[in-house]
Image (tube, rainbow, N blue to C red; front, side, top):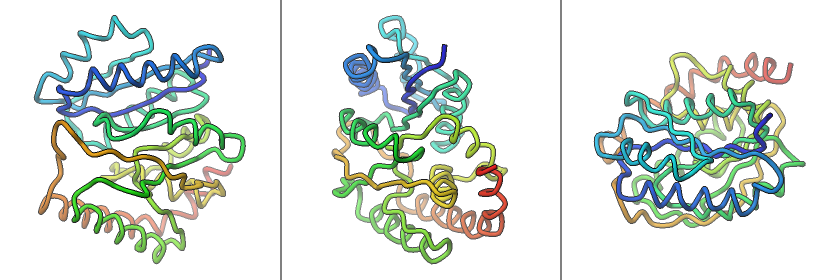
Length: 248
């Protein structure tokens, strides 16, 4: 039996909040989706150094919809792609991706769900974003860089709040560059838009982080941003062939 909706999220050093996050998202699925189809909550523990992995294993029996996956630390993007692939493996009709830091409101997913008959790739947009000033600056530079390089204007291309048709996601994942880019969600958004999908950029609520800490800060963030910009420029040469393969 196929799965109507899989919610996927990476988790790294979120021991203080992970149980609350699992509880909230499981309750959301049970309230809005259980009567109409099978659902899953897939959490990929990205080699956490704290007790995140142990807590996930401990609470898993209490949450029938929860699927816990452990991997060696490979970074946020790597964990996201791993989660996507798990969702595709279990034949998910729709896949929703978010993060495990409890900065989003589950019910906002319904805003994207309402658009599922109009597009196979739908994104949220943090109209008011509660992040550090430098991170906001980088996001703005990225937005206009994508427009300059690809002629594509996406308000929040790396947002961890997106709903994707499983069949499209499978084709998009097959076209990701190798080695895997630092921020694969940006590449997925570009390819989806260029393949003719509306992303909508639907305004959603973004909350302040109350536990844990951002893993990439200051000079490290600047370094990985430069890496991402180089990857995006290089990908421009491959984009047309990638889009043709997605449409085929």
